[in-house]
Amino acid sequence: MSFKQIAKGTALIGFVNVVRLVAQLFSVPVLARLLSPADYGLAAMSMPVILFVMMIADAGLSTSLVRSGKVDQPAWHTCFWLSVALGILFAIAVILLSPVVGFLASEPRLVPLITVLAAIIPLQTLTLVPGAALQQQKRFATIAMAEIGSLVASIGAAVACALAGFGVWALIWQQIVFYIVRVMLTLACSPYRPRLIFDLPDAWEHVIFGRNLLGVALITSASRAIENLAIGKINGPGATGIYSMAFQFARLPFMLVTGPLQYVLYPHIAAIREDKTKLAALFLLFTRLLAMVVFPGVCLVALASEPMFHLLLSKKWEQAAPIFVLIAPAAALQPVTSIVGTFLMALGRTEVQMRLAGQFAVLWLVGLMLSVWYGIEAVAATYSICGVLFSMWSLRICLPLVDCSFASYARVFMWPVVLTVTAMIGYAMLRSTSATHDVLNVCLSLALAASVCVVGLFAQRRALLAVLTKSDSIT
Image (cartoon, rainbow, N blue to C red):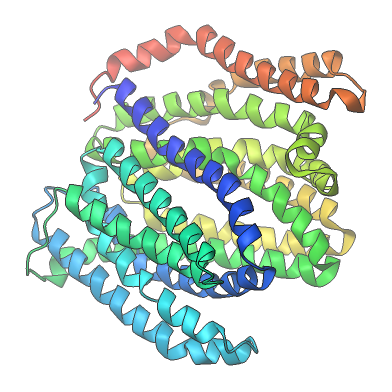
């Protein structure tokens, strides 16, 4: 498959995330007028339990299957039935434990909500293997269609239920409808059809692969939970909210650029994982492209964060702007360096990912415990220091696995860094200090970021074309 098709697939998956953000932007105000804060509170208390169990039930089996052969092999069927069985067992466990959750939260109304929401766990596991078949065959337009169709149907159901006076159940049915529609669309469009075959030894390598990915997810989730609890305990819920909002903006490069690219790129590089020369060339190519897009975007947004947060979120969130500035170094570097994780998955080295995730979690939590006493500014600065230093250290382990030297890797950052710094100087010289010119300053920062991307890609066109010529057919 050509580079243009990879770019198209990345744009489609990125577009799904944009649609999700836009849908929330328009649906939340409508639902907020129809539902009470208590309704949202009950839903917010119910969903974390379900989401945590869904993460465990996923188990990473579908990601591993993308690396394997034809979709009708015994391992695919074994993983399908194993996923479905796990989904059903976890759903039953959640239903049985829902009274305990209600008791611990001193909120008996959670019991029926969690009981009904448990249905989405097996619904999710039903889509894992069929969805992996779609990803393996690079049918990203179909995947995007299923996601957007499910999203539209779920929002429609939520609004209809809210208008009918269902209260919190409108938000519950929003989730149920989303997963029902996604199951239907995925099963209808997927080339995979389950058969009554179960041979666990044949699927054991996928279980090990998935176990490591699950370990990464659990470590990351636990780290984030401890982070929020520590900040909230020492600095209060208001400071936690400010920090979380700044961190949501810092996650946008992952959501809109790196994440979609990793999802689309994975089946391509998994198919050529034996060709180390081509893998190294592609790794450097996509690192260069990510740096050229992410660096100027994050850095220019950081410079214009005060007017941007003011315009987008209102004045009450202006404290999040300096926090975002402090997070920006890690927010710029991590989405670029994390692309190596996709190549490690293609090579089957998920144990390296799990080990690195554990090491970063330990480093960050130590830094958090030392900095949280000095306010969220100290926490944000410490996160950036930990993120940047660990990214550099982890490359020492990861680069040899993809046959890439550190010198070659460092060279791809030259143009992105030079042009980004130039654009930042330009913004500092051209921006207006008047509060009435916030819109102009935001537009200036976005225009400079876009210009730097275009100029950078043009300046590097020969190097990019050389790699693309050698890898014109990525299959």
